Image (cartoon, rainbow, N blue to C red; front, side, top):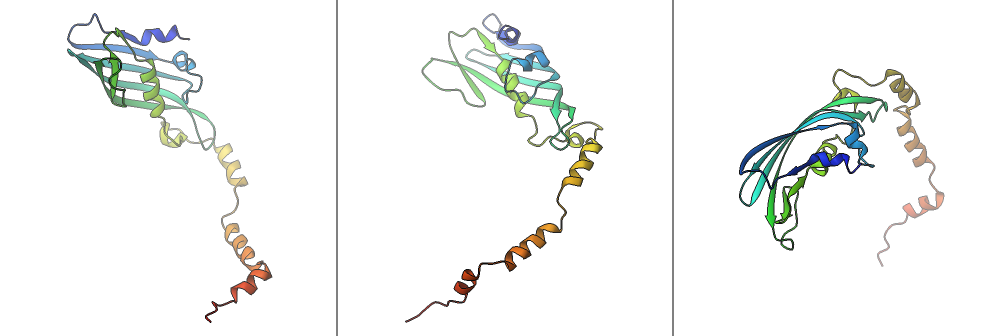
Length: 187
């Protein structure tokens, strides 16, 4: 698994100052390397533009393609189009200086390559919608009608909730009713 992810490393020490473009293919084998990935399958292309400068690099990511999602309503798997654009600044500093942040990655001056696998994995998984639905994220897809019909059949009726509250109010403990009649004693 780890050997598979080596193809997502960019050796930047031999690159000249200026712009360099890279393209990576992301598929099921990529997601299989991450045991707890939200996304289990997909067909994506990642175009990475690396602008190398003296003491830093600016990377622009454009990830497009489809990922396989599971509908939260009908539990059907469906393809969802994805279009992600991200930007990352890579700075070179002494090892004990500064920690990386969300937008800035700090590398030690002796580093010679940049591993993009974790960044690509993170960008893709963060882009997954919190609530996936066939008819929202899928293209010309609707939920499985048999499953939706069964869910509607099993769902409680709308009016029952109000009737249950009324019954609870009617069935109060008589000890509490007595306490409701007590007024504040002012002596």
